View (cartoon, rainbow, N blue to C red):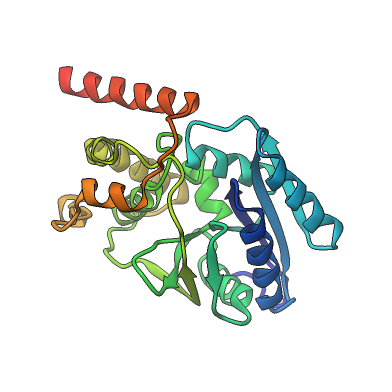
Length: 275
């Protein structure tokens, strides 16, 4: 167990686009809710064509908050950007969050630190007031996996991917919670389109998740898990892609990097079907 007297380095990773006021409110509130016992830093992922978000990130830094903007071309995958943010701002543990939530728990950072000290190679999850899933990931897990998330998905899915990899790596259906609450208030989802395809693509990659889990467990020195079938994440029988996309999808034209991500995923699906 890690030294309880030692402050923990917590990197909060926030991809943000087109919502500078929400970003400011969120970062300020998350900082205000922290205990102050630990080293807390914010990496803000800003697209190079999003001047308002870049300006807000710089303004937050100028105000004295530990904000570190990361600016680059808009990437094809949300997870790929989060991976870059972790490389930009290494920590003992990473909180991957959006710019549209509300942290409800005072001293949330101490809850993260306590969880990390008890299991420095773990993955945990915020307690959420809805069905959202926001992970807290140790540096040891990230190093063993070689990343936090995949570089496949323009939106969503990396959280469920991680849940299933965790199950396969640990042999447990139990996801570890942190004792801190988060209220997700997403007004919509950037780049949400072709949802049924992305759902099908996700489920087609189970073998990849199993192999990733095997490697992570081996690198962390965990015992191998035998009965993987009992650990599968089950599909949601009530999932309605068309209805969800109609309510929460992106109405703007598909962007070039999205088209590239879609083409790549389709090619991988075709390769799998042909094998």
